[in-house]
Image (cartoon, rainbow, N blue to C red; front, top):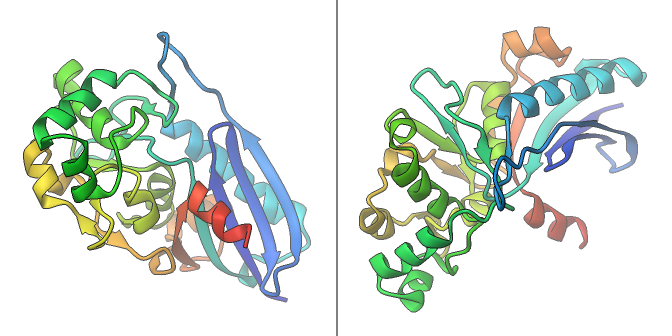
Length: 250
């Protein structure tokens, strides 16, 4: 029998769902991790906690179920939207990820409206208003409040994209998560160069954008040894949790 493995990088933990290619649920396992609130309105997590939980839940899924990793024909991911992972040139995490539920960026949301010329112009660019949980105001907050960390930033990823990078050594996002950054031209399916210019954010910090169903990479040899997954198992781009939930509900 052939199987598919789904990984959801949630706010409370990582869930692994093993299903047959016919859609029958074989097993579901979850590994939890903590949420930090160092100040009122702040919500942060360590991407390293996500990764450790991901490795653990994959190993548990493979070892506790009567399957061979060769039977897993593909892997895909969903994850919490908007949360920002800041990486340096060595692909190391610079600071804890700022989550979707964090509300520290009210000032930066107003700054975005001022820089782009108001709500209607922002919606013209990216089809969304400026909300505190989105990625763009978080980037501006880091630039203004932690300039020493901002100077170190080489890449900015979403949670599931960070985990996929760790699995495949490939850097991508996809359209549904990109749409929640407040930097993506939803109609043209590309980063909004006009908005990025107005906000003075370098597009090179953002990964290439795939379709959710595209092949995003394959399990590396090192990760195969760590997790028990088969080397070169295909990993599909996946989607933001709300988008995947909408598809799953029919």
